[in-house]
Image 1 (cartoon, rainbow, N blue to C red):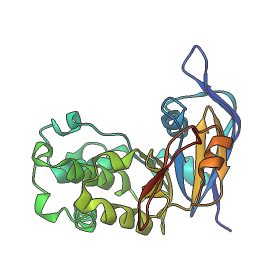
Image 2: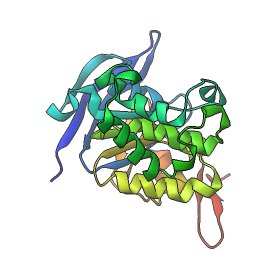
Image 3: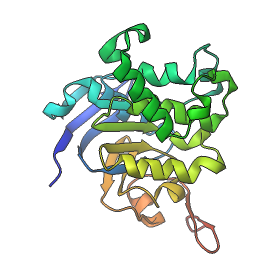
Amino acid sequence: MATCLFEMKSLSASYGAGLVLQDIDFRVCGNDFIGVIGPNGGGKTTLLKVILGLVRPVAGELIFSRELRNSNNIGYLPQISTGDSNYPVTVKDVVLSGLMIRKGLVSRMNKADQKKADEVIEELGLESLAESSLNQLSGGQLQRVLLGRAIIGEPKLLLLDEPGNFVDANFEHDFYEKLRDLNQRMAILMVSHDIGTISAHIKSFACVNRHLNYHPSSEISNEQLLAYGCPIQLITHGAVPHTVLKTH
């Protein structure tokens, strides 16, 4: 049985006025690949911020395993925007910056760190862009660079916030295959609105709409979404892709 990396017990979180998350009971183990779904404003991103320590619980507990008590062991790919490409740094600099929490400034990186960055860049198919600046990249390429920054430290847990937003069509399959490979060595918690796409790659779902309901399967029906309080549209893929709507 895989080791539990963290557990939430009756956890609630707030930004002030009202609770964003309430009475959450949830745990993530070493080989999990969980898709986090739910309506806008339901608390999905807040859930990640609580894990990262950016939002403190107002009630309940968040218990980390020994492996995750060191924040170096959590990788994070936030939502990205076109503004993220305006900095005058190279692809390799950005990937290396994922080690800064351990090593300090990029100028202090040693040969082993440089080699590790080269390996990650090659793993993500970015060799030809290693010395390119971010403003020369497509959205999909930028996504890969930021993923490289998140995984260069070999974290035990990888948090992804809407990673599909900037994945171009040419890289989408490779991106999710890469996540499948990464899941062999780290747990993944991925926030996404694209249930139809991620269901082919994840192992289970967590439906977040202030409360959290865990579904231990990658297959989920529209009826289950409604029962979990996740009023979101379900799109399915197949010989004839179609949208499943509530009876109307």
